[in-house]
Image: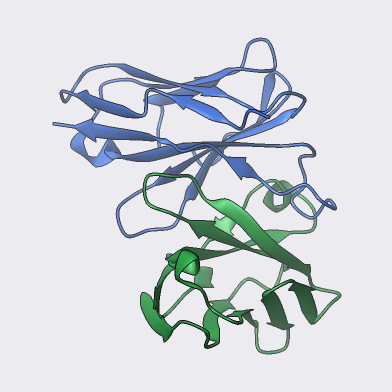
Length: 115
Length: 118
């Protein structure tokens, strides 16, 4: 069973507009969440993270929102640029125990930013 | 600065053969991880090293898979009697601190080794 779910396999957005990528999780022990970006033939690259004690974290054009009660997080990219076209993975980990060493990833959402 | 280096970038092998995949982590990173990404899936955890020891190998699918890190730096993932279902991209990552929630200690991934078992 998938503990981290990205239900949209793909998303197309016009350049300059906002991209919103969504992620849901089922494991209530998760308390740290990350977004990774992946280009073809490269490894995933860390983008932004958020701890469960926060509901928002912003870094330049990227903002992650966390709704703990809904077990939902989202990544907003604004304005979207063609170079943002990549696969975005949502990932989660636990605070302690074996789960704190592991990241559980979703299946990814392929973002295409159209010039 | 050098990132995580993985060799080879591609490996094609016949069913039943033995393969070794190598990972050179970022210098100074004591935590090292192996993940596997199958087609259409996200990366899945295989094993975690803190220093030379495997602190968590709960993700290894069966006893055909084994990994070592004898000097606490370079790691080798070894797969015996390969099967077609082992075909995937094997990703290595390192981090400064082992716990994911440690401030400023995300995983840094290599570009992976694409393994194809024919």
